[in-house]
Structure formats: structure tokens, C-alpha cells
Length: 535
Image (cartoon, rainbow, N blue to C red):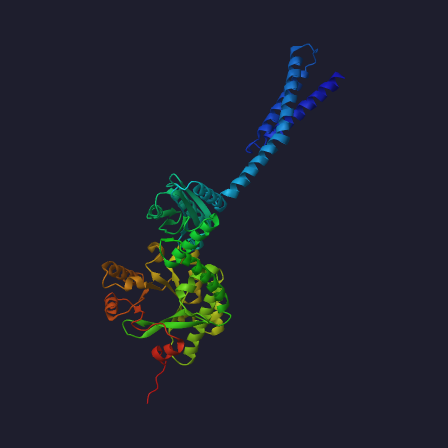
């Protein structure tokens, strides 16, 4: 009988030790406090069992120790089970609720208070101002990162998120008393200022925030200069409710972006313009179906021979009620709404059809330049689409020049992959508006491109501004060394043309040669027969 009891005691001890081992085994997993208590209880159970296994009388000291250890073990076990089943789930639920509540009022990426929190703060500010008329001016600034979408699309969402964090930290580091910074989602931030002594003080503070971004921000792929657009609404002149203040500041920042200025204070006229913009977007969605778009063509002239060697296809919109709508008004809307993709495909198809038609008529073939938007360029199947259109029309790819902007080349890997796919088709590729963007000269030498187009902003006052003259000269020289063609845009007079010739610029386009004109006029003015008949 004693032998059986000792065997059972050993089995129980073995079970306790196995229990400890099973709990302790995943050592790298962090243990909760309750599990650690249960482990201690099993250890005490094991000790108690070991002492009690001694076949001596109950009065012996080791048996007494065994009973004490067992008592401690039961206490620890009950405590551990209580914490594991009741206390910890309760605390975990509290933490989850606290996290949910935090995220309801804060942006997860930047940790800043969010739009909902801003609404509460502005409402509180208004209530205080209504009760205490001695309070000074309060202002709400909505800030938007210019060209953020280009950076986000080109460098990837990780880089975009990092940029948002860096911008928020840079501004948050300068927040003073009676100021607070908020995240509005996407690339927008809000800056609330209260108890300011003057309206001018609000504007001065806004300019101080702009100066924070005179130095570049560092991302993993390099340093980038960014800028902000700001819209301001002042209480009580620009709104008497939180919703009005936020909406009007948001309207002002979009107006600032449209006008390409840094700061705009809200005016009632902006609201009318915002409504007009929305209406224009709705009309734009139907314009393609209704055949309201057409193309005009601007010649590209070879400076050595004076011959027309190419043309740029440019989109125009003849609105049934508004008449001709400026591309500066509808292209940004098409970009933001995504309509630029089907519109861009229409432009490509129409321009290629026109070029093929002229070739079929017997005119000397020339190249047609077509602008690609960043949304088009980032389509994974872009090369396939273009190849299918060229095959369908029967146009040789060597008569198509695709123009991209520098901002599309930020992400080297994505850019090179897409450019290589396009080059495999046999088309030419140009970088448009060169000198105004972010491209790296280190990447430029490896890019599969054929031409640089000097932006008109450098050409327009090249004779008056020595800096612009130096830029044009440098770009032209660099293009020659890289074995690239170079085309100057915006040439308006003979003096500019002569300067470009002296710099050995290959081609030029601008009003000196012709404004953009419709296909019939272009055919009469600039196309030459492929074969001349001899009398």
C-alpha cells in the first residue's frame, strides 16, 4: 500500500512539473502576471508534494513544510485564476475601449488630434469667445502639402506616410501657447490659434509656419523640397460655427492651390468658385461622351534647317454653354478626379489617328508629342494599352513621342520599369518642363529617354535674366553630353531664337512659329508632301 501511495505521489509530482514546463516552455512569449502566479503555485505544489512524499509521521518537520507549501500553492492558484479569468480581461477591455476612444479623436499615423477633435475645440473656442468678448481674434488655418499625390504615387505609400509624419513633427515642434495642431486626414493639417491681438498677427504666424519648410525633408530615397498651401478663416468674420470655420478654411486652401499662392484668407466669392468647380467637374464627366473635346497642334521646328519635324498635341474643351474652357481650369480637375485616364487615352488615340491619316495622304511623316499624366504613367498596363492602340491604327511607334514630367521620375525603380516597357514599343520619350521638378541628375544619365524640353519659364526672359540664360545653356550642354535632344518651349521672338541657336539647341516651339492650331490649318501650314512631282 505504501509503495502504491509513493508511486501516486510521484505521478502527481511529475504532473506538476510537466504543468510548469508546459507553461514556461514558450520562453520568448511574454507571460502575463496571472500566468506567472499560476507557475509559482505549481512550483509550490511540487515542493509540497515532494515534502509530503517523505513517509514519516504528520508531526515531522518536512511534512509540515509540505502542508505549508500546499497552502501557499492553493492561495497562488486561486489568485492567478482570478486574475486570468476576471481581472486581466477587465483591464484588457478597458485598454481596448481607451484605444478606440483615442483613435476616435486622434490620427493613428501622426498621433495628432483629428477632425472630430478639431470640431470640439473650435466649438469650445466659439463658446468662450461669446461669453468673454475681451478675447482676441481666433484663426483656423487649413494646410495642404503641394504635389503630395505626385510624391505618394512616385515614391510609394510608405514614403508618403513618412513625409506626413515629418511634416507633422516639424510643425508640432513650433506650436506655442494658445495654439494646437490637428490632422485632417490625407495630406491636410489644421492649425488653430486663439486669443490673437490682431488679424495681421494671424497672417504673420501663418508665414512663420511656411518658413519651416524652406529646408528640405529627408526621406529614404533622398532630400526633397516641399511647400504648403494655406487657407485661413477668422472668427467671427468668416464663420460663427465650427462647421463654417472649417469649411471656409478648406475652401480658402483649395483657392490658394488653384491660384498657385501660399496663403489665402476666405472670402464669400470663394464659395461661389467652389460650387462652379464642382459643376465644372460634373460637366467634365460628360464631355468625353458628348464629343466636346478636340485637339490642337503646335509645330516643333528644327533650328538648323527651319523644318517642322514634330508637333505637340494639346487638348481643348469646347463647353456647350461656357465656350472654350482653359486647360488650366479643367486639367487639374481631371487629374484629381481620375478622369484624366480615359481623357488621356482619347487624346493618344485621336492624335495617333490624325498622324496616320496625314501619312496616308502622302505627307512627310513627323512625330507627334503626347503628354502623359502621372495617373496614366503609373498604370501597370500602360505599355500594353499604347501598343494595342498603335497596332489598331497601324502607326509606327517611332512617330510617337510620350512626354512625362520630372515629378514622375521620383521613384527610380517604378519609373525605370515603366520607361523600359514603353521603350520596348519603339516610341520616343521626353521629359517635359525640364528644370522645374525634382529629378536627380544621377538618375537622369541612366534613364531610357530621348529628349529634354526646357520649360518656357526659363526661355521667356532668357535675354533679361542671366540666371535663366545660364540654366538654358547648362541644360543644352548637358543634353549634348548625354546624347539627348533638347527642345525649348515658349519661344516668342527672334532674339530668343538666336540665343537658342548659339547654345546649339536642337528644336524649339512657341508662338514665334505658331500658336496651337487645329488639324486642318496645321496641315495647310506645316506639312510637306513626301514626294514632289517634277514638271
